[in-house]
Length: 328
Image 1 (cartoon, one colour):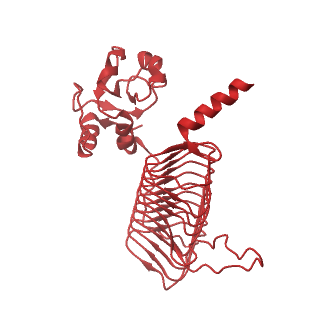
Image 2: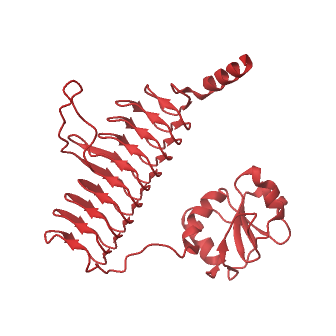
Image 3: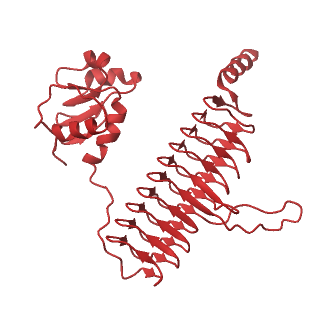
């Protein structure tokens, strides 16, 4: 249990340009963040979805991040913290209450194997049974879990967290990234000449942009010649396959079990729903949303929302769903 003062919460929000309106005392203490339904008298909660309005009316929390127009529904025990984007506020302060944050303790396990040519910065933690191969550079404050394989030909920026059972080869992992357990980054892609099945040698790499997160058991293949790229501040879920030469822009959100075939280029701020498949050599613009279980077989221009198989404009897809349901 933590004791977090409201002034500390407010300072974080305001540093991130989020205006805060509240009558709560600066020294008021909060112990936990919880959902509306499970909050108690020393907790802080949030309201960002109208379907939880009944929970809002009955919450036991001490305070709630909420938009001004919904504050009238709060019970007397719960004080409003008026913000424009409650969910963003939650994201900003969540680390304050987290007792499980992973940070380097600066200890390299005696049970790890470190190649003598590796270049380490300060305060690096490497846990048991991890191997670091040749031509590896690791920046400051990096945490690497147990049973990992790092290298050869890897550069890891500062403040990176790599969980257990991860393999990284032929890759650049920029600062602030999180690589979750079981991820496989930088291995040879699925490339061969179709008639003879002659394997194509891959000599490129993978680049993961700063402050991105790669989910458990996700695979990102190295490029044939250049780089497979995941842009900055992107969130890739578990069990995602990103093939060789794929280029994903900044601020991507890709849900579980998505497969992206080779050489497809994806713009910034793209959202891809779970279990979607994207064919190779396509161009997908900025601000595109691809609904879950879609099959993308053609280029998608910027600012489009698509769904279905083959994926099409979502308004057209909805009309087809309604038309087909009426036939039954």
